[in-house]
Image (cartoon, rainbow over all chains, first blue to last red; front, side, top):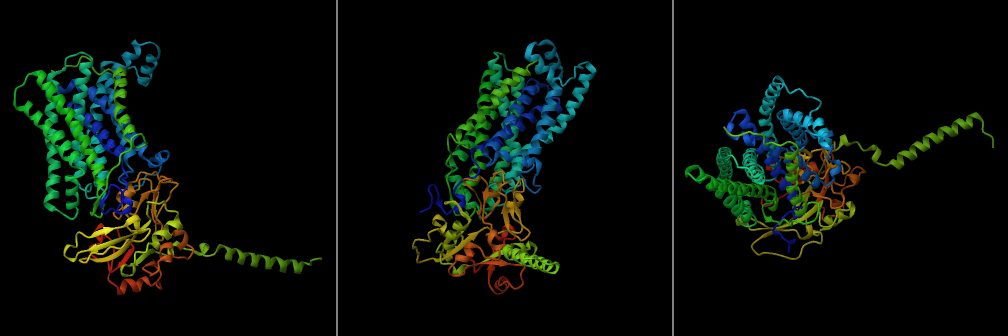
Length: 388
Length: 243
């Protein structure tokens, strides 16, 4: 009789899963970051007025999640105190070694710069109008520059536009790179596909757009304001079309695997029909993909009243977020449930209150929201921007 | 006793010569070990393995391998010739205590010892983000446990399931080909205790090593050749069903 939870034959060292639910969270969070940023950036680069009300909110949402993104990795490491070695002595051949640099580039060079340039006028005004500790915080955020003449703001805008232009490929790079970390593992046929970075990018955009849609509706409700319907309609339309591309790519991967039916197919197919059935077929595909796509499709072809559209958008976006989380689960956990001998399957036993358990995972999933709340308080994104 | 100058010089000369010899004797083979002169691998004669588990126990004892984890293990295959793609395989506790009797009348049955393949193009070395996993100049894949961050990417990258996270050190762990022994002129613990001589340490750079005759005169295969890892564990008469 084999070890508990094992069906068939696993190499003895494979019984225990190496990458836990924390590693499910990592691509999920970076995906939300990349998606929210791309939504904001595309609207700025293409000057789409309808999406203007959520431009700043998207950037702050991206920042709140980006600040949390490395934490699951840090918690997961056997020796977190050595993580700085990845910066000091990165191993050039490793697909993982560049994450720290890609992350820092994106955080420091792209996101913070773009937010600062966009908010500079507000920061100076807030530094001049506040008193007490907040005055000092805003004064620090000005970085010593109080020039807010029309000419200097024009320069801000031009530089910000250039940063945004650099930011779009950077956001694609961030999440495409995360996909590459998985896609480049030739030992694992569940991961090893050149489509992985592309699927990750599009699923990132889907989840990021959905997250902004939910955050925008939640914040307008909390503020007792009316959501801008033109903005919501436009963002929902983006979600619909990007989701179609994402789903097509995933189906392409599936059809390709089924048609090729190579040596790993039987094992993977069995896994999808048994251990991954609920998370992949039910949650990811039915509930998290087909249902929201169907709901969004209805809003595209049928004229519905604004309150109904709002409910449909929020529900579809919520389901999308669950579906993409399930997709990350199926990639990360699913990729470790079968043996590299293709002769057996193991079980993931998720702990609860341990370092890599469910409790810290839930805490890390919640953490971006208080950070976002603080950022919204510090740098209110509302202004008087309205879709035109 | 008084020493004249001639006696003093003669005594000093003798001391220098004798102490030098003593030093060389004490250092043993280690001081003479030149990594550039070796290229280590292993040969395994599948037909000779009886599944006794001596190698698994010997490795665990020699290297302090934690129970439940394996630097080496033994698999038992039962293959139906008509369905070669779906063999029945078991490895209870990695073969640590041997195997309970089992025989299917329809099947051919044999044992396959497994260990790190010390690949010349190893995916684990490629994957390590900090270079803690490295290949030594003499062709052995080692882990610097003082440097490993415990990210486990190498474990994911190994196609053969040879790595694990050490449960107390929290670093990647694997077969070192008993590096502490082979650099002293000894063989590996698993080869040392194998009662049938199924496993043999091989130095591919040594022209006098029997490995060359083994590779020349036998039907030899490596595991998963399609992974293009240039594995250096060579199996004699390996069945096509083995994964």
